[in-house]
Image (cartoon, rainbow, N blue to C red; front, side, top):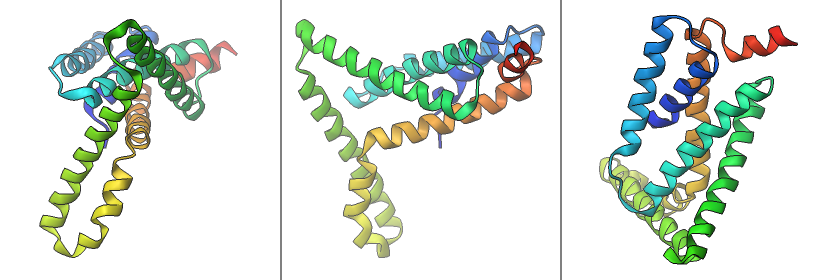
Length: 182
């Protein structure tokens, strides 16, 4: 469910914040971090893709720094990271628009259009495979086009996978560090 970067970058960040001591931990952090960065570096298409990439970076930073600074409990940490990333993304888009590189409202309309077009493509494919689902085509497109909802769901899935993998691989996961320090 979660794109690779939603898992790889937070996982690498969590491992590094937990201060890896073994070669295996360093290797896991390097491979996952490298893979996540490489996927973000591949040229994207459109404003929705650019916004998603910015979101991945911001949510990763908020999640990893939050895990290091506060006693980490997954759900509050992940939801707070999504909130901080949303605020950061809004500020970045509005600052960019104010700097004369575009109109902020136009960016959001373009992103919504791209999300709707992508949702329509997915729903059309499903209807081609299962024609009996045609009556659900329009409601499905409307639901799938609510891109902030799907972005947050993908994010939470990716962060959960990264959190769990970090707990399995790190010798001293951040959740244990918090318990030991209190």
